[in-house]
Length: 402
Image 1 (spheres, rainbow, N blue to C red):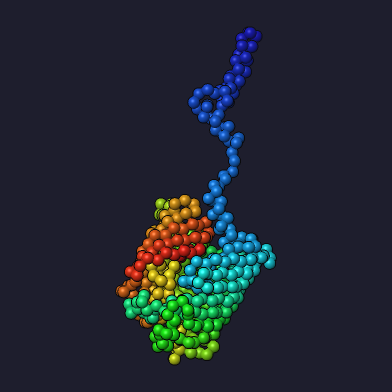
Image 2: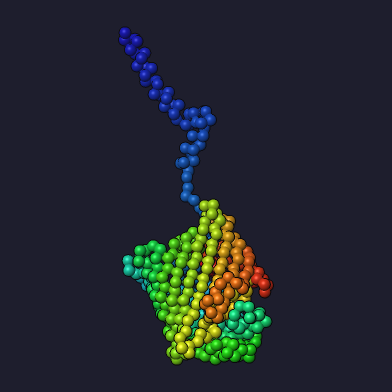
């Protein structure tokens, strides 16, 4: 009896030992065992993902442009549209955990200059509000003027003017629910000092106060701003989904009274992702209308305008001006990789003397292709080649078009 009991006990002890040996991947010579052993070995050597050199460069550029607690940073915003290639920089210093002061300036080869300082407090009212206070001075030396209207003007009507402008502004943005609703208010004090230009035919040699309202005027404006918007984009600088729908009211109060007016801006942006964001259909529409009372008039340099790198890209900057404007844009954006997009686009728009004429008849249009280098939140470089009925135009910009 005792012999039989000893044999049974030995067998019971051997079973788990054999099972344990078979369960160990290192001792298993089957195909499944070899794969398990390889996976086990790989798991002991896992390392965090390291971005390639191109991805690292794009991230560094985005951090520079965003001023992410850096002191010296590039600043590529021109004093005015149409100035050409812009170079500049700034010095940013934090004056608290979140607030900062930024001193910056830019210049173009055509003599456009911009110098300004900004104080920014981005986390007011328990992170619901953002305050920006800006003071600066800018100069533009060769701004184009072609007369008023869409169909009644020609590229051959081009004349130029220059101006300088000191300005100071304060803007407060509040998100009451910390999400999509944005309510904004602000004011700006500025003086416009237009003059002739040496870039070509000067405006006073080609136009009169009748064909260029406000010619020779130098108004000082107190601008009052109020806006409400629904914004679901991930970032204004770069996004692949969401939209923004806004209404902005501006009151320009002229010190002398003659050039006071009001302007209403209606703006709609929608990004529609396709195939898990690999493609995006982006749509933009904008309407600007101006309103006067009594003997007031809107100076030509304050009128809504189309033409240039952010609206009608196939036309010269400031090509069309009048009291009201309509702009329609569509882009088909293709994600090439995490930092590079291409786009096919079409723009259409018109300007009119009456708001009632802002319809779809007589629109000027263009089409083209674009390349964009971007990060998750910003677009450091945008290149667009556009063709309208007045030729090709190449656009370089450090901002998203919309």
